[in-house]
Structures are given as structure tokens and as C-alpha cells.
Image (cartoon, rainbow, N blue to C red; front, side, top):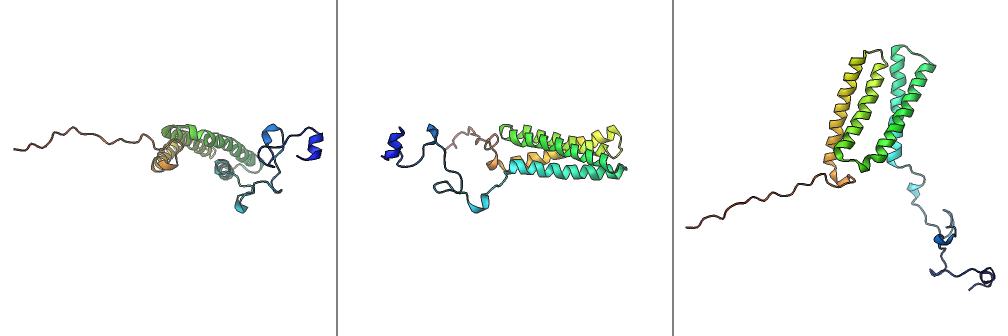
Length: 181
């Protein structure tokens, strides 16, 4: 063992020279010798569970600004509507994306339908439409999103976190043997 390490009461690692982090040692920083290296294309990549809801919320915020401009609202109030739409839909989108792996297929499709229908119904009402007409539009768009997301979730069962949804077992039919005379 090293003489300096012996003077300070250090013990040798059982793994022949590597640092054991569970005893309070610090692992080497990325980029230093001995540190695990990331592949070149993976440096700083944001996962899709975070980036897709943010990009969708940004697009919805811009659409909200466009929709309020169409109604005649100009400048600051339109920007505030767009910012509010971006923040609220972004947070709700991140919550749905975070918890979607723990939801059943139908519940997950309902969550996406409610989020989409509620957001579009609210945005439709910003154009000066009647409340009943906006609710009907939001409900229709939510139902369309429910059907579309349910279709996608059911046809891509391999990628679902719970595996196949209610896998079907082969039915046994009780057939009598063929009579031989």
C-alpha cells in the first residue's frame, strides 16, 4: 500500500485501484481519465418526455396569440394570453407525460383527450364564440384525440410500459371426437 495513504489511515480498495463511491469518495468528473464517456451524439440530449410537451406547449401558446389577434386583441394582452397558454398547457403536458407509464391504456387516452379538448375549447372561446359552442368544439376535439390516442396506444402495444393490453388467450372449444363407425 502507498506510504502516504497509510499515514492518513486510508485503506486500499478491494477493486484494485478504482474508487468506491459508497464510502464517501467522489467519482471522477465526466471528461477526466477513468470516467465513463457518453457517445458523441448523446451529450446533453433532453428526453422526449420533456421536450415534446414543451414544444407542443410553445406551439399552442403561439396559436393562442394568433387566435387572440384574430379577435382584435393586440399587443400585450395577446402576449399574456399566449404566455398563460404556454405555461398552463406545458405544465399539464409534463404531468401527463410523467405519469403516463403508470396509467392504463384507456385512462391515458382519456387524459390526452381531456388535455387536448380543454385546451382547444378554451382557445376557441378566445375568438369571441359562445360558451356552448366552445364547449361543444372542445368536447368534439377531445373525443377525436381520445380515439386517435387509443388507436395509437393499442396498435403499438410492444412499446407500452405495461406490455400488451389484455392479451387474448386462445379459446378452447370442447369438441367431441369424430365418430368412427
